[in-house]
Image 1 (cartoon, rainbow, N blue to C red):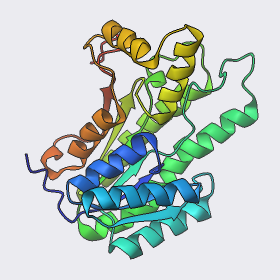
Image 2: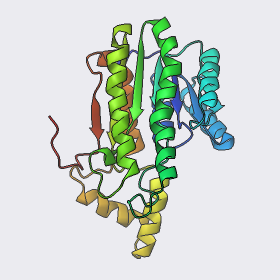
Image 3: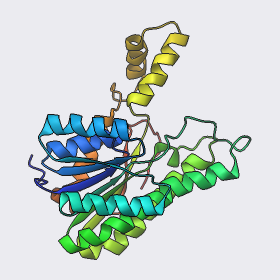
Image 4: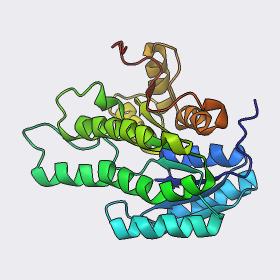
Length: 266
């Protein structure tokens, strides 16, 4: 299927690893030129070079701190200058949820504020800066990477709240930008196989006296679809939502979790 993305201009935050990198790679495979942003320059440049070699597209690495409004403003401006415009924004930059304790006994006010500044406000600022370029083009797509804790919070405080806030932001932006030809959607990934998750899985396997392959196979057999969702699986869904073919989908929060969540949503 031709997703009609040839020569579109995309920017991806959190693009040096994990789901952001996978999304940038898949967009490039579909013919997009991509600016990727992250805080740390060395892995960012390595990711850009790798994706460029693999896809033959222009991949521009730009350092950005999504906790800083001026850094975001410069990042989007420099990306637009380098690419010749912006059609697509994938907001992926945020601390990975579930990596530190997040319940009411340990979470600090400062951590909650930082979480919201990084994810909700960071996503909003990126969208605010990118939207004028999309309006100028008369077409655009914004994808906000939320997180499964937004639907299954457990005892966490900050992670589910910031993820839910991103979905509310998504709907508001969709309502605001739709008349300009800009669709906005959110993705709810569940546990997803990324570089960081594999490190944690390897440590868990070692504690249980198992090889990583055996441990992953056990997880796979316990999953509903007998498949562990990967960053590449998430990227495929995101890239379809970026396509002109997805014109009818906007303001939605779509779970890409392999059926891990037993809840139904109407």
